Image (cartoon, rainbow over all chains, first blue to last red; front, side, top):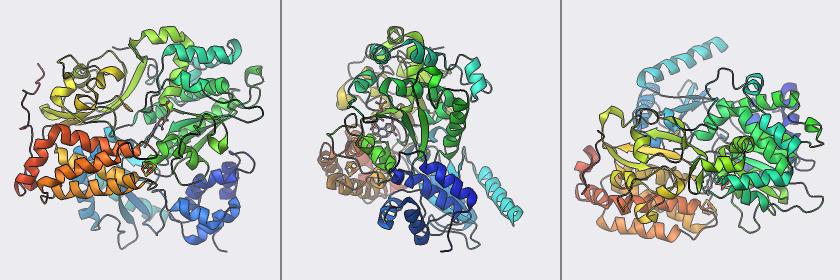
Length: 167
Length: 450
Ligand SMILES: Cc1cc2nc3c(=O)[nH]c(=O)nc-3n(C[C@H](O)[C@H](O)[C@H](O)COP(=O)(O)O)c2cc1C
Ligand code: SF4
Ligand code: FES
């Protein structure tokens, strides 16, 4: 099998499983799926889910049913940076629609799509617990809040730079 | 300035670290509880404090604790509910982000009182950086002897573990949370059995909100009776309110529950008035699930009395003319906001978040979204309003968990108080696509601050 945790990821895996009593290792499934998604390119191919099932000694179906239930797991490939913009009530009344439209225009993609260069995915999501700092979006592990058009431009430029720096 | 029991030190530089928190009087309550108090005495203080659950339902915390079963040889667990996904609510995030040790101290005292040696914080997956702050704080607390084996030489062992969710509002419901913590889909369980008897891994479990557990610290410090003197009636102590929407100063505020809604909205200490000098149209005072109120019923009750920011006053008038304190997510809508559209975004939210176990919730939330969408897009019929009313009534009370009710109430309240705005959309299909109903429906003059 090609997908495997490296040593560092394996240490992290073991520390996650250690948080639950003996025999209750299935409890680590959600955190371990986060680790797998972060480790294997931002999404969960079937191979990754099967790998996790093997590590936790549970049936693959137990992993599939969980992975399909929770909105943070991506079951299809995504761009290098995923813009998850909140569209729920409080953000909507604070102007999220304009921001969403602006991002669509700047990246020339619709919600759910990825830019041709594989750099950005736009995802519309429900309340992220940042309603007082709206409009907002989540990118990876951080929140970008109080969005304006200028800020969106700067954020896009920032991630483009980051991608160049990483290559 | 109101009394501050939780956020008093939130602005002290470095308070996130153990050293500063300790220097500022941190872990003194934990020391008192573990060294000087019996388990019964701690539960008694929490009972006397009148503390009500801050997660939304307002159930007395001390009473919940006294229900936990104690079968011989079976471990018990405390689970801290940090799922915080109710639209409009972001208070727990603030508390955890800035005062992680306050939560840990509250968890330690509560774990001791409940006999939980492995306590879990179930935090919504999106709060990844907050989870990291908690992880770091746990390492510090362990290093300094507040977690681990034989804490303070009392023989009590306790570890706190962070567990990240993965994006599902329903996992805030306590039995869905437990399922999720067991590595499953977040499908709520049928009660009974209640978690206090059979919860996590079928062991006796108490689930409490972040703010509830943090409030145990000041309660132990000052004593339950003193805590109960703050506030009014059965709304004791302080409450965190996360204010958002069209106000000048969105943010998290700690209030003692004697302040009027009007003062909370217009005073500079809190929301600072409506943004852009606009008029107040409506408010959802306790998170997206509670009934929306038009300005006139928000500031005064139907009897014409001042409405206050507490459990009793916000629900004065029942659902006919009142609302609820809920989770403390306070959402303000100004004169430019469209009630139909706002209700639509909330209906979409509940459709998205329904776990799908019960037909009334799974199907009903989908239908409500579709009909609201139709009205919003200028394609509605008059009969759609009655249909919406009918659907929400068929959901309410007919489901396994309260998410069904939570989806039904916002739609019911919007129609109850803003029916004329729905009718306007239907009678003015083209116009409704380019303009707004505004404040026209008010028979009563709208309040204008002096
Ligand atoms: C759909 C739904 C979502 C909920 N979400 C949360 C939540 O995010 N945080 C929370 O503390 N309680 C939430 N609750 C309430 C919990 O079920 C439970 O009552 C609460 O955690 C108990 O803690 P408390 O008594 O300290 O408030 C939710 C309930 C329902 C029905
Ligand atoms: S009411 Fe809705 S969310 Fe709750 S159990 Fe039923 S289908 Fe699931
Ligand atoms: S509504 Fe967008 S973060 Fe809450």
